[in-house]
Image (cartoon, rainbow, N blue to C red):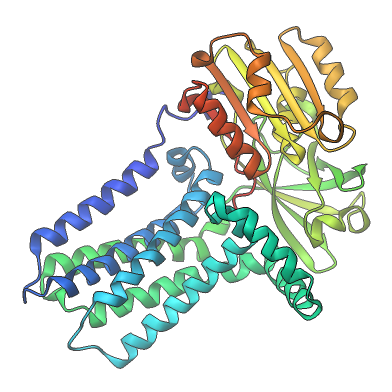
Length: 453
């Protein structure tokens, strides 16, 4: 079962999108402007490319299995969805500045403005929770200082708190994010109504194909897809507090259990005080345990109140599984690095080692602020497997784990070393850069995007 989830050597999805962008641009440039106005023509080309990228973004959240295959997991597809949407919005800037249509329809312009405002609002909402990561690295310390100063102003602190409440609710964000396709449709209709280049049948029909395919996938996702997404009925068996901000949830199946591979994640539907709520969580159990276990950190309202709201016997629905984060695509020497709640996929790997033996030599680093959760269980697993060495790092005592510290402890050749990372985005980025500089091949660096919202 592990081998069936190993992706091809290359992720073909980004290459396919790049090829489509190049092909569309080439078609437009070959046709050229009929009236010789290259400035307006380039502006309208930017609008067509924006529709292409946003249509591709809609395809990537269609939940179709081949999307996961082409992008090496729906977590990566979601990351590319965000990148394409942001790139499409950037292209709207030259589109607005350069386009000059002599027969603009009033309603087409209204659709354009409405669609643009809607798309910008949704992208800003998605980016704000991680706004520091979007800034260039040299500006981040200054931005943090500015944020600290702003929070010190009482009325502004209350306003920021309100904004965090609005922006931090996953279910609210998810519901409004489903309007993306409607705003893209508005921009698409605006292009058909107001573009001056569509006297060319070739340009018109390529534009119709690009926008129509994206919107068809959007309609599929909103109407038909929910009936084809696999889901499984479960019941809450136990709710176990691990630390003050960490809870382990155990579920037992009410029918056929979900089959999964260690390291995958699933969509968990639980009943809360605000109704049924849906969140993606990594599975931390082994496939042969007979129960599903999710190790959940208190990051929002739902997860913070988990131990008070969820009780044994309550129903749960699990959708999936998803993801392709598996040690089976690693080499004979592997380093696993977990930071904080990023330990969850590694817990699944460790708990499954008896049923799915790993032949590689493994160094497992688990960095956590304070006493290490699951330390006793991890030590017991390591005692049964000679090829597994465990390094538990308490950052409050030992300081932060660094790429240099890991590499100094590794005596082998980095060219044949595989590294698996899961943790805060800043930590993963730091380690990825450090390992690349040390000679670890990019294809041997693997991460799980658990912050892919």
